[in-house]
Image (cartoon, rainbow, N blue to C red; front, top):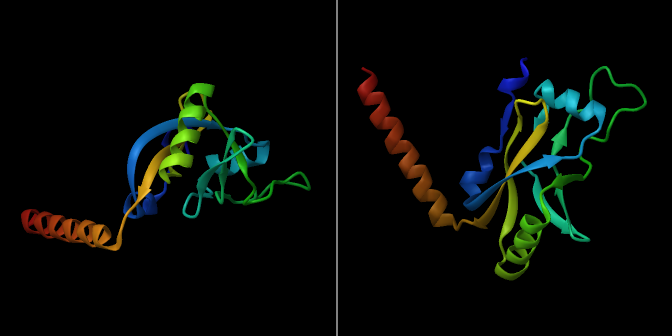
Length: 150
């Protein structure tokens, strides 16, 4: 796989949450982790962001062990530090504490310089009826597309 087409999406994020704001953060990774991401072996399904001692971490992101890794291989579900500037970190920490919002990963990608980046969203949870609305819209759009393809 070429580096520029690695876009690992969290499909559940837009279904489970309203995304209010988006940020692009760098990730602190080990050598075998970046190699696994370049092979497309990562999942954002159960991941979320949390603050510890003023630093932002992503928890629950699964990066499969590198197949050619030796005893130096990484743990698949370890916490990984996210890199944002101080102003953004303070702003996010306040919003997460006060308003009951959460941080969810949206897309894991590799930028043009070959660095792994994670797009995270400041999100508010959806209620059950909101999810049903989304499903109805999706079904009606599918019907319209099916009708016009003929």
